[in-house]
View 1 (tube, rainbow, N blue to C red):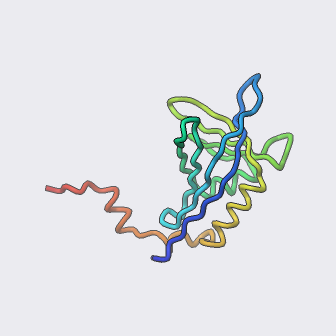
View 2: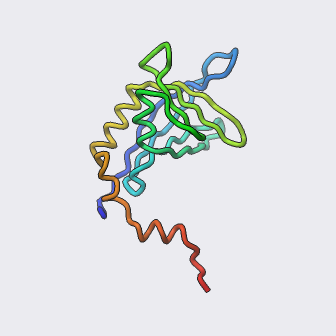
Length: 141
């Protein structure tokens, strides 16, 4: 396991899409942390200065740049009419949101993550003991 952890952050603006209304720009911070090398965090800024975070697989982002992917709460696909745009759909019990994002910005961020942890080497950054400690109850009496 590696101990020289790195966190990458990148600012982006995604367009929130809604029927019969103009797109609304939403500021998003993309984060990648080698402590969770398989995941990307997208923190969507809310109107009150807070944020809503979505965590999804780095592989899902990579695959979503070239084809439709995702079965659950996060789905990605290239836009049908514009290959420079990626459509991101997020679903939760409280609602559904659809965004458009720059494919190039997402690919650039993904490339930065690969500079830190090459695909296939994520396991070198995972501390299994720490992961198990977070999953198991602390009180074993």
